[in-house]
Length: 495
Image (cartoon, rainbow, N blue to C red):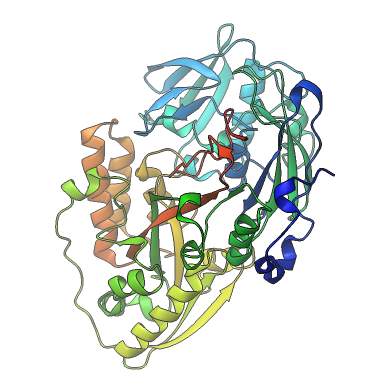
């Protein structure tokens, strides 16, 4: 194993992170390909064996191993990726595939391969979030094309197909009941090894259609503990560290961290189906009890923005379109007992929960907290096991368009409806937003849908997070992506 000189003397801070010891092994590159592999410390371990049909898809995207037909530019507009162009005809969209693309197993990208991947995603249970409320079929068209048809005319099809959960993989990925992405992508790095929830390895794919990656490979270690991730950057054990906790940012060299406002909102979801918060007046009482500004100052040390709505400063157009929302009058909690759930994977959330516990107790609620790792609490949250749940939620993660997030989280049949909300007015507004063509009209419809949700007090947005990423001084070209789709790219390397 190669041990770079900068690792020979590790500071004592790493002793607190025995979890990391020996984890960042690298592979020796030789000859003309000599160069250092990029060592990455990721926050959340895989939840579904890196299946692209789960949130693990975003890891595959951030490692540049799995690709989609379409990608998004900085403004959230669709641009070519594995497809070079597209055109709409009513409910159908025809995509022209890029020529000369091969999967990591050497097989060619064909219309049949695209049909296989998208059909598997469309029929998955649960569906990828981006397909909530969307019935989609795919077939091969004329030579080098595929035709995507939806049950209703959908102006957002290209943006939907940019979701990492709709990555195109080789046939070998689909041989079992689960989807296995090892050696099956099209990106500049080939996923070669996955060690459960501890680590993964990728090697440069020299036949990549877009050129040759500057780094010979990537070594990934999953480190849920935020203090340990920050320690890895300080000690030199990691080259890139994602999601540096706010509490650790002040302990790092400011030149090594990048802070970017991101489309991620820290929200208190209230269970509207049963328990105390079935009552709109008690939901209103919870909303009025929350002092988000004190949480931003106390927990986030000012490195976040107080929420005015569900959509934050990463979508600057929202604030200009937003109007006052009429809400229910607050009732008296009168000692009502509630349980709030959250998770430890984002280091700030347990602190947010503790602050909320104090604020809600002051208002008259009796508050119990339940805090676990996300993988061990998500199913209970979705099943309505808690009266309230604190979630750090990306609002444009999948499509670059917040309509998909709003539908997923607040539609009666949304796949991520933690609030258990079933409100006809909200459903109507969400359907309108989803059907409106892209542009200013769609943005207005999205803000109207946001207002409909806020009027129910099913969700209380507290703050908008900023992503804090750590890059070692000798790292060049790491992506700082507010959508959390890119991290190590074709150009990323260690000097």
